[in-house]
Length: 66
Image (cartoon, rainbow, N blue to C red; front, side, top):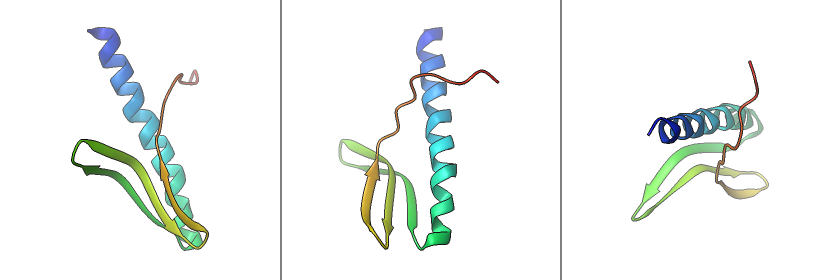
């Protein structure tokens, strides 16, 4: 159980880090959305901008040592 909690927490932290990085794209004219949910699916990050529309799935495999 502890291992699953750690993996879940690590995944949440990974999505948060990617989301914070993507927020910078607003300065370049992008619209940035996070955690869009639908019937049986979710999109971690969704961007609409001058160069197109992008969806991103975040996978956190390892975490750097602090």
